[in-house]
Amino acid sequence: MSNQNISYTSSQASVLSTNKVLRNTYALLSMTLLFSALTAGVSMVVNPPHFISLVTSIAAIGLIWFVLPKTANSSKGLYVVFAFAGLMGFGLGPILNTYLNTANGGQIIMTALGGTGIIFLALSAYALTTRKDFSFMGGMLMVGLIVVLIAAIANIFLAMPALSLTISAVVILLMSGFILFDTGRIINGGETNYIMATVSLYLNIYNIFVSLLQLLGIFGSDD
Amino acid sequence: MESNMWMKIISALFLGAMLVFLLPRAKHMIQNSPKAGEGDWKAVLIPLVLLVLFVLFLITMVRT
Image (cartoon, rainbow over all chains, first blue to last red; front, side):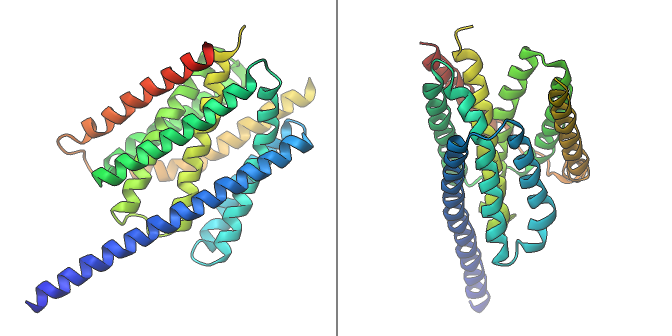
């Protein structure tokens, strides 16, 4: 009886802890996305040159590679996440301005934004309701990511529109898979640090948005 | 023209660095990922097929 009580209390504590990570992750994710929207807005007004997107991306990735692992277990990690989100948002400004200068650019941006929101909410809801462990996808997702990176490097110099289109479509599929994988990891206790979980989900959403924007931009343009 | 070439080189170096950074993690995940059980892939394919249909719907929306 007492063993049963201990086991029940332990599993209850585990569920409570998982729910806390999930709640904190979604709260921080909402705040970082709003902060990114704010810095993207500022960047659109300032209208910096295009290479700023590359500079901010390098700085943001540098933060999550070299600074975040040392700060993720302290409150300093929150500053790093906001700095990362701010940089990523600021880098979006020149890209969004380019789309806004096209005939139906506003519609394309709003469709990509709404589409990204629906994809994220639907996949998260699916992972949360099924409570399935998607960790078996890890290897396949990583192989896909590496193949996409190699293709992206090649396409910087080849500049093939068909390859660019394929990369965008594959990135949307891969990042959707990563949403299931990352959410499954949080639900099943594989990720207990909400700061790291937020960064993973943020990157999934950001990449889906940018790829969807590119896909809709190509198909939505008149030429 | 020259600055454009530099942008391309820096972008390629950046993505290359990402690749180098990800490779050990990818290797670890490939070796240690649990095997998929019965019905696991079906549980992933259904939402992904719906996702493809949704993206196609978004494309038709911006084309009309």
